[in-house]
Length: 319
Length: 252
Image 1: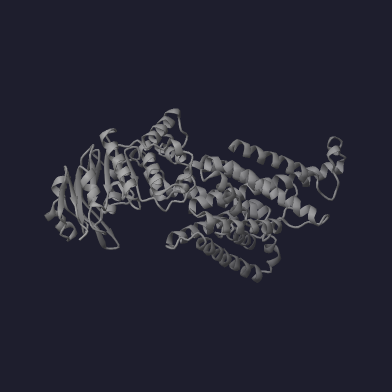
Image 2 (image 1 turned 30 degrees about the vertical axis):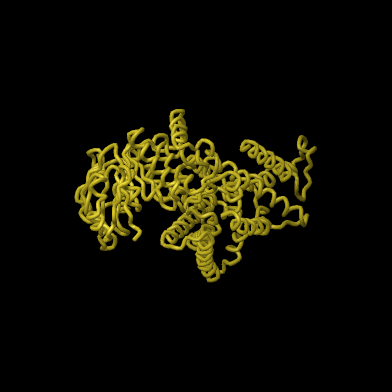
């Protein structure tokens, strides 16, 4: 049965990928594929394919980041958007632009990564201190925490006339993706691979510190590895695509419902479903007001918040 | 053997365990009893390295607990804390397979899976092995965790209040399992337990704590005795002999 579901996800990914390549203002039809003119070739190689690749990597990355964070914090509603990770990454981008104005992308990514890591780490520390570990309360704390960091970012952006630049990262958008601007996302792939190697350890860490010690596992180190993976992936996604809300929240929860919480078997499902979901939302955003586009942050936000409300309501009957 | 010598532990200047010494006999069930706040759980956590002690030494098979590698120790000592707040969606089989983590680091071999199967059979969980933990009753879940500890295949099994929130039937079931672990598999079981009648019926040795100190320890028969119980609990507890067992009537 599990293998079946993986198969459906792979088929969906393939179908959506093909559609994604052929949807756009400059017409490329399926029959053209073997005799493309130079212009069509350019479009395909420098716009459509980069877009497709970045959607797949970003979708898979954010879903897996959410999964890791939920496991490590032992809370189903913690994710890069509800723990200050994304806001911290944005602050990092701003700082890199203020301090080193001509920073190259790698430098910027490094700064975003450091801030994302620090921010998430700080949130985990706050979590340790909170005695009242309610499933809803914790993400609310995370959202507040993220907003505080967000307002610090806004304050310094305002002071330095950079509001416009920094809001560009507020809403995820794939329409600006061209070859040359998205390659940073590839950094996320090895991070996700390491996540897979650590899958069992994350599952054990999710059972608590005592449980981990009993099995002879270094709980702190595993948590730190997890946070580093989350910070790397989140910062490169924010930097190249922007904030994609809800994704890290809803995808792992949907997978958990039918698949359980064993990360080793969950990770492929989560990655695939994340990619399929973003791809679907992206195609929707491109056809709804054709030839214009709705940015991905908005489509995912609208559909995602609906699913999120469903998950919240469902939780009552189920828990 | 587990030997504890002059062990002390403080939390924020409050002494929780004070100068405790004891030897745990191999192949027996030892119960820690005593009123709330006596330091039973702290002592158990120290012996299982979940918390660091301040003063004194804990020797596990002649080796100080801090000089054991954590991974090696996890093949020797298993600790099960109260686990009722876990809401992780793992199947019983997945949970039990994590018991093999110290040996396989998550990549289970054929032999590891055999151990998992043995543990599941021992706890009679094969029928429900694919059910999720959060869908089980308290008794089933506790059995699943004990199965995991069996798969972990340690000489010493430590349990912190394993009967918490269980009804009579399931409490008896768990205690019988612990007895079988000792009698059939030769394990050494140490547990913190509140109900002195369960301690009286099923354990070989009893260690009584009060205010962080051991006030009595010895074979069960010597501890379950009216004068001793008065000393531990400040209660007059009549004891009735039923067949070969002593029953403490502590209700009035």
